[in-house]
Length: 352
Image: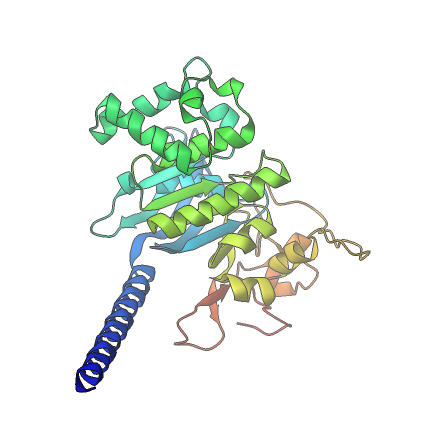
């Protein structure tokens, strides 16, 4: 009997030890995840992008600042022509020097650089050379990554399988025009992941795809984010896409960030009239009439005195047509979640 009691006690001690170790491992895992979420990868500080035309300069992006953190998704939303793609190209230093003038700073934190970023462009059909097989696009990366062609091919086959392509060998041996938009976008994502990036820039990755393929690509991006712990900069004009993916949101209009903050706050309690207009103009399955915003964003050569949204805003005052509002913090300080808005009349007529 004593032997059995001793065995039971020993088994209980083992179980308690195993539980304590599991709890300790879980706490360490949560702490690591928390530290990764707070680890800044890159910071954009007052980025200003201007189009050069002889001696003239036309500003397309006005002093945009934000940070990207490891393991988080930042969504940039706005109508076409508001400077979203220009901002992504400036982040990767891809803008033509003789055409665009870039001011401000792109600050990569120690341990990160532009080589740690990959990009998925919005039109996969125009991203690939139609004269080259897809395997050739992967092999072009061999010199950049310092890998042999054989190793590159192995990595490409593995990534194509991971992105849901059933016959990766056939796809690698194909030309771009022989594949559908959804398959090409998966190839594009595989190509972007080849260098094991810490940051993935997805510039409207679902624009040219049907609705079913759109959600498949978004689910894939979400899975890859969890699996590889990458940060995602997601650019879109589709609110549903941003809502499904992003933890933080920047709303852009005419080259300005007009609202910026946690996704939940921006989408449920928008402060800027433009953000409220975007949310009100979403298609719904009810009989409620869509509230479309009148007018259109100003062009790059259009100079507007005051707030750039004032000509389309229904809440303007005299000061809105004279001065451009600054991007100001809204709400309580020291909450850890900063919500900013560029409006003299934020919320319900109260000044920030």
